[in-house]
Image 1 (tube, rainbow, N blue to C red):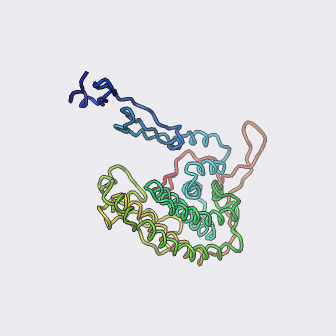
Image 2: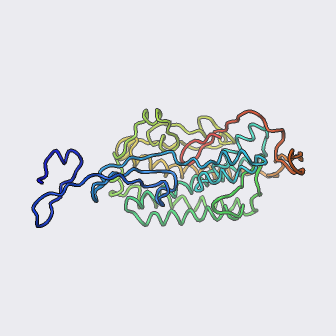
Image 3: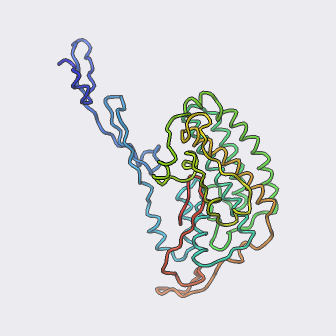
Length: 354
């Protein structure tokens, strides 16, 4: 049969069969990609509509990040045992997850942590922001066609992971911020290594900008692309760098400070449409670059002001009987309250409510 316009409008792609001079009618097929696909990391499913070898449409199905961690946490013997679970909610920025959880629990249990703990937590949280953004920036450039910046980002990330490993023995999942304190105090060389990293990393951000951020090909592929206006971002409940990339100057560390963030001098980067339109892909990318610069400023200030003290002096410990078994240590300062407690903290990809 001959191909007609009607068949094309119906989504069928007419293909001429060699030697027969007639068209072969093909129909679309829906293929499910993910959430088990290696590229979707268990958090995304894509319904891909294909017509032969042509991808005609892609329908994203979000909402696969729920891995029953909440139900697991309900059965933990004490609040401290939940921390390894929040680590795994986003293993790229585990320190930030811990920060949000312990802030909420300390608020509920009315625990005042030592000054030294506050400063170390801020340093670790900002380091966590840097390593998260380095992965986001490096892989973004890689997806667009730039290989070398990805290697540079991974190189710089290793320096931060070295500091994490020296402090708590882990490079990915830390269980470091505990309710009322920290699992370990930092080494005597911690302050010097932190300040050394700040001195090392600042020129590397400029190098990244020269190599990728202001590269003409990169700009052409990101400027005025994927524009998310500020009002739409707010209505959709967007937060973090994506919201700020749309020109909205909102950062929980400034607008509703927690911990000791109100003691530090830093700016809120936001999209300005420098290379295209406000809220485009380039703005969202560049906000993360500028946030790394501000994180370095915060880390440097916190390291210079780092006070002495015992990082475990406020960790509550009380022996309490177990109704169904032998006595054991329970890390609470009161029987389990029958109420909710919320602690909102800034996170590399948005705000976190615990």
